[in-house]
Length: 130
Image 1 (cartoon, rainbow, N blue to C red):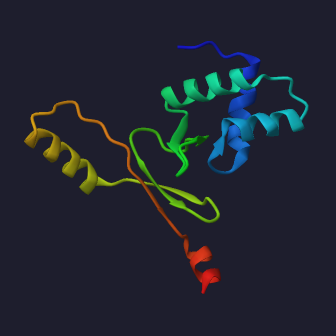
Image 2: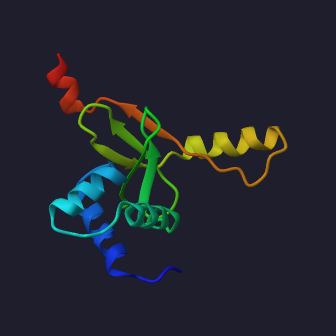
């Protein structure tokens, strides 16, 4: 386990208050705006460590950038993410779990892992788009 440094704690707190998925650059900018001298490389390392330890969720944006947010659910889970406002809902998906295990087994795979994030428009954004 990594030791808890002031930099790591600053990244964790900033992630907790960010409210949704944010890039390392965006989080770094927010930290600097608040007066923190933390370096961008340190933010990247801290986010990666937090994601590895299950304290942060991470996903790839449509343009390939890694985005992070504070994890509110322990254990394996999935997300519904609004493409417009970024609202994120953590969901379980038992059907996906069963499907992934079955398909992997049919092809001789064991210890299969997966990532499922569903992007769409939330109810609020759908209503305003009409």
